[in-house]
Image 1: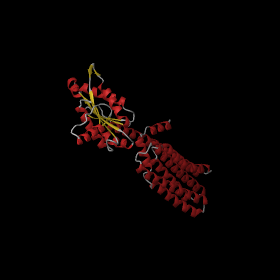
Image 2: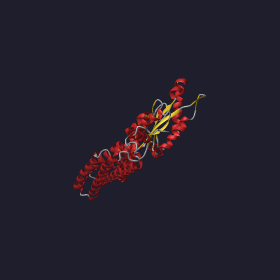
Image 3: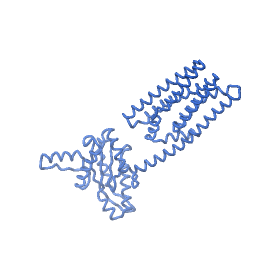
Image 4: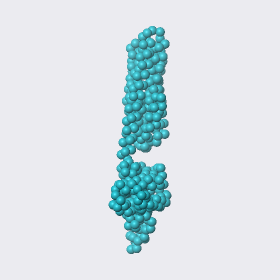
Amino acid sequence: MLFNRMETGRASISDAVYLEVITGLHGTTMPNILAAACLAMVGAITTYETGDRVTAALTVAGLVVAIVRLFEVFAFRRRLPRTPRLGRAEAARWERRYVAGTVATALILGLFAARSIVLGDALCCVMAVGIGFGFGAGVVARLALRPVAALLDLIAIAAPAAIVTLLQPDLRHVGLGLLILMYVVASFEMVRLSFNASINQITLKRQFEQLARIDPMTGVANRAVLATDLPAMLQAGTIAVHTLDLDRFKEANDRFGHPVGDALLKQVAGRLRAIAATDDLLVRMGGDEFVLVQRAGLEAEAMARRIVQSISAPYDVDGEIIELGVSIGVAVAPDDGRTAEALLSRSDKALYRAKESRGGYVMARNLRMVETSAAGSPAAEELAA
């Protein structure tokens, strides 16, 4: 039940938040460096005092793992600037590497503590167990959102020392073993509580992020989304920007009232959503203006015709049959512009020309042809939509 809840919570994390979590795991090298330094110091002291080769080998192994983990962190940091928005699959691969490194470190520290208990040097034993407890506290703090990894770390740290102590016949070793087991139980309970609190915070964050991106009237994206998403969509390839303005909407709004006008806008948004592909971006700019960013930019003209046909069909609002029209300006990247500002500007100009023609659509490329023709000839080629 507990793991079902945790797996459900993990799946609910959005890609952006998941990447934020993985970036946070790779955000600092200090815990790894401190654990390696403590292991090196205590390992050197224990080896010097006891001459134990197993302790020396575990110390060397811990240092090697720490170096490998440092290289992994630095590799992630070099990768991130080249692709700021990693895909979830790639982020999951980085997570698996991180978890493998931290579990290996935890196991080495656990074996190191168990070996110190076997050697019987009280002070070396205290230092070795102390390193394990300190690393476990770091696991609780860093891996609360990756609870399965946290549990593996805690078991890897505690199991070797607990097994060694519980196998000893005297009461003191049994007591130490039970304390180690209770530490694991308490630590995982802290992970569970922190996980639940963090998931609730992430859920609220996602809700607020979604609300900040949605136009409350129509349920489509608001104009703030256009500023953030359009540049990213431009990088993906050919796109088309359709800038729409409803014809005769003001007359309908004035005649039938604002409630009917609001209902019309909702129906228009619904028709546009039905036309748009799942990966297109539909934005209400305000009033009766919309922008549809189409990823299949090569099919821009066909999309414009579909929009005109759909939006021009009659609307039934509370028994009133209302007819609207639409004017559309269409700019296609990269021919009509390579930046968001250029595409929006040229689609606006095409929209203005479409409104002059009393509706329909105008392609920005045709508008540019007219401007070129007008510059060299007194007669301008007439546009038709």
